[in-house]
Image (cartoon, rainbow, N blue to C red; front, side, top):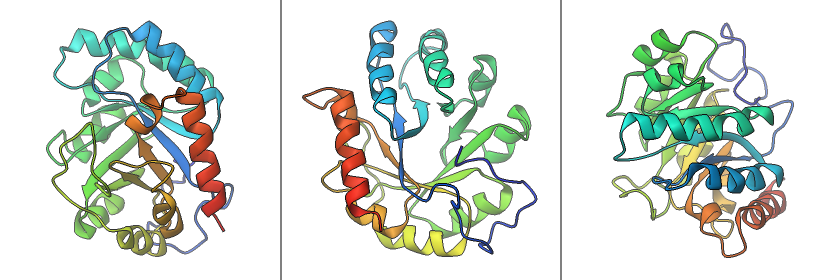
Length: 231
């Protein structure tokens, strides 16, 4: 996985990052509400089998813990069976309980340090950094497996409070080997400047799950857009 790196490596770039696979990948996030997780699992399988996804995040909002547990039990196995990491949004406690590969924490969620302490050194722990270079440097030096920047465009699933520029991706990719995720309203039509600027991942939600021809077609569109843009 792109996330795998020796913990002893310096965070500042001394060797080319992504030497095994330098292409941008999709970081797939679930819709904020899943009324029928088993049915959604079939959509997820279709998206994953289309190729191009390197991580799946379970991100449900305003639901109780049992709903999150049931969704994780449905979606984690088909993801991990395809050798793709499955991470939980916000909740390192539930990530550990449900067998996730890691957790994504925001600035208002559990701290990176608390998440790492709970999940251990081998788990994936990613951190939202919005458009802050300071937060990103802090997270990278603390040991985060990736940092997430955004929002780059308006989002249908989350109120956009910060506008990020592709310039921050270019700065980050020139500064460090820690992977970066671009998030916020990303589509195959608008992702080109993010790929060019060095995004390791494009975090996507609506562009895949609301695609009129289904998630596999959406993933094909992303793969085409990325391959057309990549050097």
